[in-house]
Image (cartoon, rainbow, N blue to C red; front, side):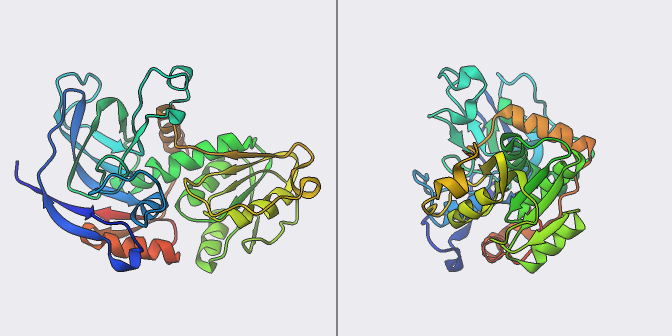
Amino acid sequence: MAGMKAMVLNRTGDVSDNRLELRQRAVPKPEADQVLVKIHVCGVCRTDLHVVEGELPGITLPLIPGHQAVGTVVQVGHDVQDVREGDRVGLAWLQGTCNRCEFCTSGRENLCETARFTGYQIDGGYAEYAVLPGRFAYPIPPVFSNEEAAPLLCAGIIGYRALRLSGIKPGQRLGLYGFGASAHIAIQIARHWGCQVYVSSLKVEHQELARQLGAVWIGGATEMPPDKLHGSIIFAPAGELVPPALRALERGGTLALAGIHMSPIPSLDYDREVFGERVIRSVTANTRQDGLDLLCEAAAIPLKPHTVRFPLEQANRALQELKAGRFQGAAVLTM
């Protein structure tokens, strides 16, 4: 097989410096437990931004970023049983666990200390081909186009896990802080559950999308909502949002922190922000079951992600516009 085009990160730094370079790479060969996927689209995630700018530890360089890819299986390793050539599959963040530790054996593989992640320690989807273990290849429901499916594979899965960890129940009041790719999917699920959704966001464009998707209240980043919230999620990587988000919670409410990276959290006032059995809970990666459950529920609703296209060669521009918050919904790279 001839070579492939890929956007490669050789050195981390500010995305304004166009850190990704278009390169010709050999098409990877699948091992016995892997499949080779011809990629059609790959979502652009805020985690990709943290990787490129060197905000996460232990990045493997050189690296092909990207962990929201949708493509067609073109080759299958001889030990793979449940995936066939021609299947349309998704490649997501989690790509390997030990299967032996206390976390893996108790349904919490997302906490495995030797977990491996796509587009971070393993080459990802900013390329024309990628390999991944067959057991981590998600079947894509036919109701979604490639472009619609891509954001579901991280923005969707993490938003779904964050909703679960926030403890929100049908009919309750949910707060969302930051309204990017993940939040614009989470609001659709929450609305499907019958929740009232309150959105805090800096960007006027993001506020407008929240309004279109059914938010009952929209305010500035730290503005206090008019009602106490039963659960909230902070999607923005801004630690300064934690105190006001806790103050906005009803007694017994949970605040889920959905980002993989966050700026420092200021000191908290116990009486105003914590007392009353308020809970702060981080969201760490996801399990495969989270992904399967999200895709099933997303197809049943069905969710309609808002996407903005960029060709693969413009991955740097997509990351720059993501950082500046210049588009609504989620960006996807097309091959």
